[in-house]
Image 1 (cartoon, rainbow, N blue to C red):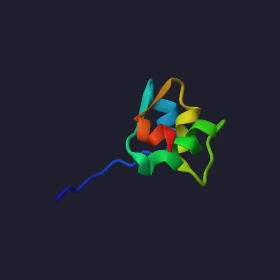
Image 2: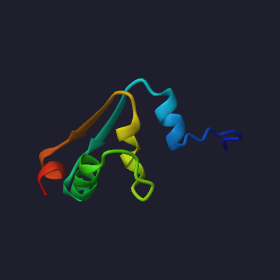
Image 3: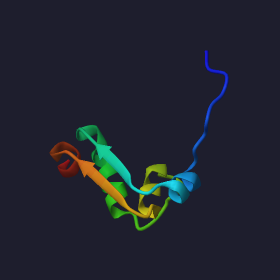
Length: 68
């Protein structure tokens, strides 16, 4: 059983990341793809939009996620 852990919040991700890669796979990720693609910055009600604040990021999506 682990005795220690590390918690990384959105601010830490932005501050220490050099490249962030987010993968969205499957039709069930279509809403997430649309929301992240439309975001212009971090939206606290949709935490994955933090990727928009990172220095260098890539959003990879399959056809099902990107077109539904």
